[in-house]
Length: 415
Length: 158
Image 1 (cartoon, helix red, strand yellow):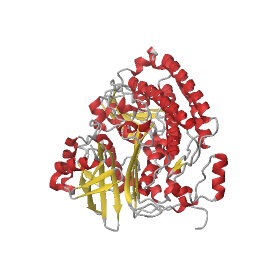
Image 2 (cartoon, rainbow over the protein chains, first blue to last red):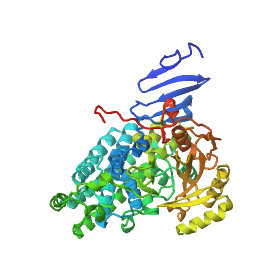
Image 3 (cartoon, chains in turn red, orange):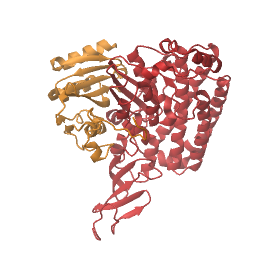
Image 4 (cartoon, rainbow over the protein chains, first blue to last red):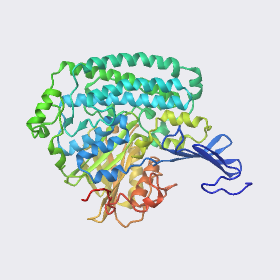
């Protein structure tokens, strides 16, 4: 190596420093490139790659830039405060991400939400799922230089965020499911607006196909890139649409149904190719299934009269003012019991299918007002391993393609 | 297959190396001695538990024990896929080295690094044991152990 040896912060003769990425020579024909953590493509994450010419020989995903110590913080807070804390992992997927925590605590308490509350949870879960997929499409679109595919899904995502806003009172971070039920019932005329959104989304998916998924330029970038074979997908323990696009039939909603998923009629799409294109198709097909689920939930909500959306154990302690608000506005205000809630000693394990895959919570209680231990492993945390094992052998230009097709979300992975 | 049948299958496969079995809600924990953990994990994998969902460590300062649990499940076997088996062991809190299960479940790669940084336990046989989410000075504090207390800042008097 000619020039001087570079150290951190100094740029050597052979070094290249551009915003968001810099590289240094580490051997003959071997360069180390730091991508991120401020790179517009990588989000709050750094991938350190070693390249021989243009080919990646080693990749080291460097996570943790948005680590918020949720497991430790959770131990110092009352049970109910875990819900607004943990949903910060994926703010636009808040219902899916916090639901297993709520279900784990419900299991320890030995209670179950009323049927209507279960349908309402599924309703918001699927709205969140579609919004999160559209978010992923937008980011992926901009990665591969297709700016229309950035604008369209971000605009269409607004439809689902507005529905969630209408239902819960918040665009993101809804804190909707609570122990024993949910916080609000649907507003009047909600189901008709939901059907309108479903019709609109079906039309749009067809337009996405024409302009993006079946676009020859996009296909040339995605096809046979980042192939994860079935056996490797299982070995690495990846999850969600990435797993199903590699030919493994596993979806928590199907394999271990929770809430009312076993009463609904839907399919789990599975693709065999395992490449970036299959992962895009996988998400398109899954949005169609989510729309199918939403239609059935809308029908159910129309047919059934309103009933309490909170378990009796909590609802019977509600002051008269709370009951009046529920009858007039459909809102169940948090009853004071939640603040002092003690959860019986024991351990529970709950999982749910979020937009990016399976999230698992291991919850242990020592009978006190705060959790003894909450272990969270989110979908993105489990999918991060892909970068280490799949990137080597690809060209640098394939890195954004693979990164985008995995739909990796750093705040969710870092917890 | 019911959950009791799964437990029977595990009892049959692991035999007398099982120390104790604890059932929780939605999970069953199988504890084995720490020196038998690799053997037990191999047998569990042969049964069809082909990946792990997480590696969980829990600190019990009163009993002077840390429990490390690998929550395993199956993708390949649809019948097993709804069950979670936690294969674990207890070690005294001052234990420094335990065997890594990377050779059995590749998934353990990042997860063992997380336990290493948060509890300061070294997994022997792990190919690349470095902190994953934390910076090295923070990892040295072993932040998820119970004797690390978070000081929360406030402008108000408490």
